[in-house]
Length: 342
Image (tube, rainbow, N blue to C red; front, side, top):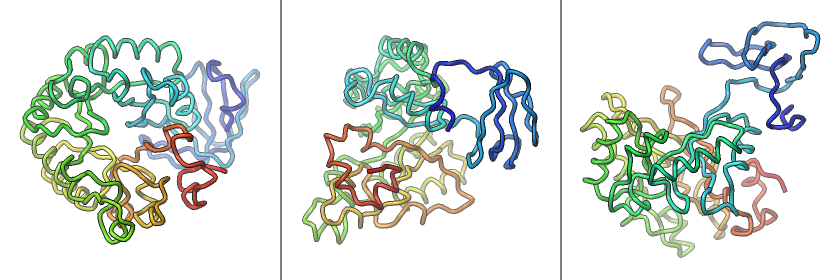
């Protein structure tokens, strides 16, 4: 709320945040409290604190006051696609949403598959980003799925993980070699689970796709690779993170594996909580998504005792509006679910 009133690069060392709902999971706090910040550090959390002389006061009434959020899956598009997004603009957007650390995907042009490209991105981020930018490296050179990228060199340059992002490493032997390398470097593999031989459609396979005459994507396309990747990771005890999970069977496979000690985590996206294949009805191209929208919302498949990360990777709306239908043509419920306005 107050962020719009400040220069993003201004360093505010003395500040009092009042009247906000303080949520601090580490210290089990969820109460109305005030927070005093001095020299960039939280020094006091209490009720009804009084402002000191020269101290900036922020009225956070109606707001949550939380630790900086981390988004594990963002697309800043630089280098190569700066007309869509840049490290600077993406970082500014993240900051305005309360996100202070992001993990950027490697599907740029060129792909982030070498130490030199990682260093180039780090230099841009150091100069222009107002949040922490952690780069994810590609698993294979050019993300072509043929030869492993320079994983150790990229780790030396500072990558936090490896991933093919929106692609699947279909060669199981190659993926296992990548997992072995990642384990030796103590970084996770971020996996996009989609069997390319089954995933040639444009929406969920079912009655609606048949009625519309559109090629469907069966849920098995995700489930098969989910099971394979967990099996490979478990066989060598490496860390695996599954991106944008969208099927009930994948959730069940993940739960089953975690109960047996697999080092697997997963994320879901907000649009899979709010939209289904029914929103595609009428051939609404605004709802073309990968992974596709399923028959039921993901919220139906998650128990309260099963925790997944909520990723804000809204993959479609990261592209220029000119590449989609106009927002004026979006159904209102879709606009609201994505947090957009006319």
